[in-house]
Length: 369
Image (cartoon, rainbow, N blue to C red; front, side):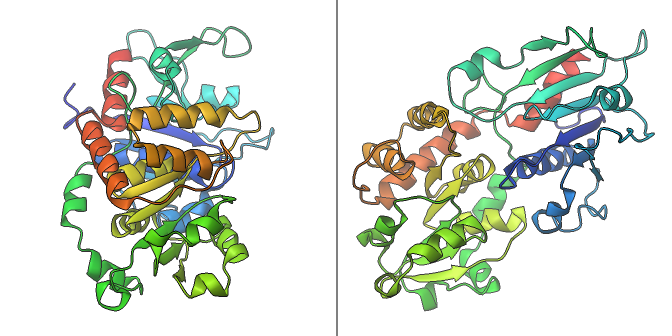
């Protein structure tokens, strides 16, 4: 299939916002990527109001090809709306759509007609199981949907996975980005008033080693660009007079995804968290550290190690990740911005040789129809 001019299909993407907005962030980027390829998307979210800052105008229909709808996920009496059924149904991250909604949004295909495709878009990981499980079928064995089947689709970092979300023309936008005018437009210090000090984007959970990082010599005079919510609260708890002598902090509002991308492009060090911002840090090509979502059974330890292996992280960056994420109890290693940026650029080059997720998803769906 030619993904430059694919057939126009209608897609239903269902998103349960668990916490920290990452689920919706990924789903919105997927919807945008599909719409950029001429597809028609209905995005169903149980907290669609979050898009008011993530993608201003989305709920009002400002984005061609995307219709945002409220999904009353927790209301067992909520009947599915009377809408034309779609061609593709995506359960984002196993969000479990009620059978009545599946039957309404994607009824069984009529004989002789193209098959409708039901998918579970899984979480991102570099672990080996992703390549084994990508594109596997999952038949429904019982209940009102018995006999139906869906497919597992795994994002990933290797050619044997579904790839990563990357908009058409993203790298051209990155290359054309003018940092200084953008910083001034955001009311942030540029090179003329910020000196040669690095800019550090802080988008994290509550890293216990943040006080050590604030005193790292490589970040002397740094401008800390701090996301609202948990990052701002984490920094507030450890910011004191001695730190204020060495650095400056700049509280940021919630920003649209497009501006968040530019924030990462403009920073020499990006401290990111979750799935969506990790991918955007990779496309930014700047030094970054990933604060992985912690899991109670420590499953995130293996996930982080698998990612560091794929990243081919230099020893300093590997050790920093382990301490930053609490895998080991040791002093925080020194920041090495040049080595970490070199690693990030090499990883980005590898990823750019692979097809992006939306292109692969379109190709997969057409084969299954």
